[in-house]
Image (cartoon, rainbow, N blue to C red; front, side):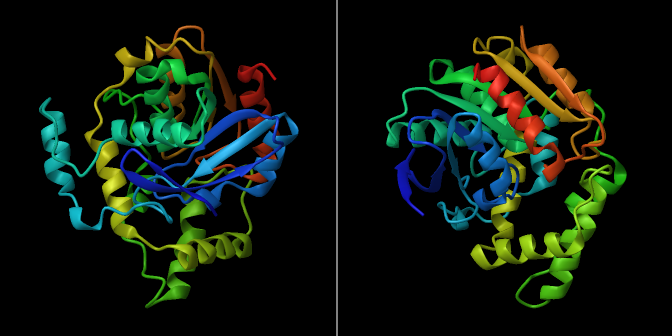
Length: 295
């Protein structure tokens, strides 16, 4: 896959869809590599007229890793943020938003439609808010605003996020089983993905890149991020908010709050959907992205 120099780092990316398609930048979530976007979802977007740019966020996959930054002190980050001060973290969501703009610059994209899932939605929100002239539209998927008063994840989802993942090198089977367990906890209850598919996906992830420290640093960036609602109120491009009604990790209230914070936005809640994109929702989510993009 090609690489681009952007915002002082190297970003691994790929492009999918027709050459004359409307540019769409997909932004993935916490700890996810670009290869986690299902091909059937990319095809659904391409069929609707998009030329999709998708990439590895910093510190994940084959983009630049911030190894020398070490592992953040999560308790200190949370305490500092709760006190209204700026936590000391290796980088911020604002830096990751600047990565998106830098990648667009490297690819010669003056403007593009944006769609991000979970942490990717947070990053997309910041691109649309702080670099609004670059955003043709925004679709924020299973994401939230940083509002501290919103309901938290379920205890089971919180435990899954906080529990270290087994090392695929020393115990590959435990690593694969953890992928199945995680999907059962945070995935879509109406559309469970079979265990063999989940294990194959996890194995491909591990073989491409295993970087738990990068996950920790990305998570610290989320924890350090302030409430975005005031910024969201200034977004001028068309906005679609998509959320699963049964999301245990980022509860549906996060999607509702996002839509309520962005004037003129559209909210689409999908029953039976959790914190993932199972095949059964690909067409619906792709259609929502196309709708707000005017395609």
